[in-house]
Length: 318
Image (cartoon, rainbow, N blue to C red; front, side, top):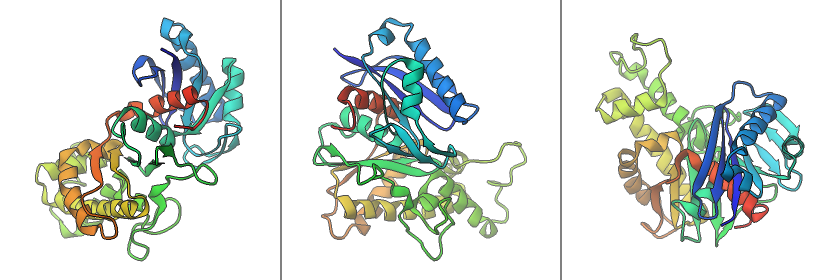
């Protein structure tokens, strides 16, 4: 069985993995990223791959693919721009090819994760599939009629920046107001909690002196699960915005399955049980109940598995 090497490049970590054609990880190497300078990132990737190549599985891998944040020129492997990395026109494919001595296929990280989930996870066996990654922001990808949708400039799937609340929403990092990402990401949940603080003057959720570490969306979610009134109020607003965004995706694409990945999705059934009925209520033009909303199956491995599939296919072609 042929194996390839997939790399998931994140804002704080690198995962390099040898993956077989069934999507099984045979060998892995993970390391933290402390600097986002191009040369430092390339050096860290080369080190991770070089180490994994010392294993039998690594030596047998026939091709390399990488999922990188940002808009990618698939023909050249150039990162046109990556706001989170501060990159513009970075020839990532060429730099890695030089450092590793072999061709490297480069794709967007969210599209790689979509490919991984579609082929080997929650989308397996479907023809029309959407992955939404709910983390600090919202990303994802689309498979329509069995093919990954790329769009004119390989940017299809940027769900996070369609507007839900253009007049009364939070200001998004992109500069617009009320984007899906601003309202319904992990950061959105946290912003809902801060926005409601005045209504819960005795709440200790955001004012706890027990720790010097800033509170995150995970703490808000856990507090909601425990029945904290402040957290529950924030969670309700978050679920409403998430439901509106997902209902929009159903109207746009009419998929069989929408899989939710990323850190926020770890809420599992606590989130899904609140989300599904509200999405059904908001679904109008497509038949209600015909899109299944599920948790993504591959977790943090989806990007590397998808990048390995990218290499196996010689590009984005499922």
